[in-house]
Length: 342
Image (cartoon, rainbow, N blue to C red; front, side, top):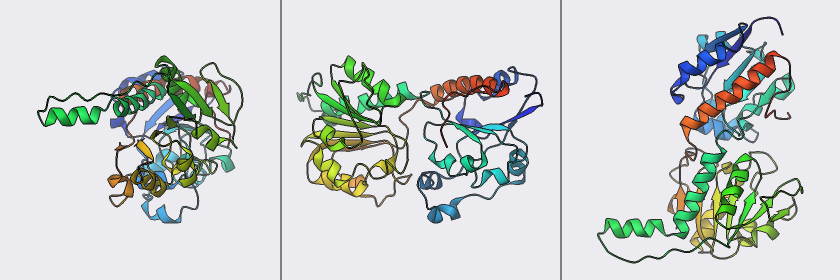
């Protein structure tokens, strides 16, 4: 590649505290590089709605492009993006590669990248440590009864509230991407037995037993804790339904930091109300923000957070190091890291 390359930074610059420094680092990679920064970000509701077609219900949420956005899209060869317009190839005829801000890319896939021959790489691994720590924090908070300890303190009551030891318990992981790989490492450090539901049956030293695509309920039935971190896809849509929650042992815990579409939220709420699960922790929802009328808000012993299990400062630092490496590869016409098959 000998001609100049226009690189678009399309995420909101206020998300990255080192934005100017990262611009300078990108410019230093190669004299052919020209950086253009222009935010394109859709509402959370449309982003979560673009995971699984059809998209009729969220089309009205998609913002019209400004003239500045159209001008940038018309020029870029590659970009970092959180969102892209539908049929992006029609407004970005030179676009050849998109780097996702996050590990999940369903909203970007819906822009028609595959049909246009545009490469897509995700940010798998850049936030895995922080999210895995969050998973363990939710688990420890529940088993050590942190909420009850806080309530006693708030009420100025000196009360002994004892928690449970998690060592020797069993954790089941749905998916084994970078997040659950990091969860597995932490879980083993805490003395947990680790099971994993994944497409590949390949052994891994961090896993005690692997379960294949037809064995989800068998795995769930053995676990004290189930933690999910899978991308959004037709294969994961509604995977954790009423039957799956019923397969979990009474008194077990469910944690989801992947995608909200994995979960039948009515079924999860009903399972909690029935007292079958001891607790659930969700950092993601089928629709984000989680609607105020959702039954999850009033479900007993649920921990709800607003898709914030990562550390933003580490996210953009790690993301830009990945993008810098991939940009050098792109310029040299070499294979990209974290490329998604479209």
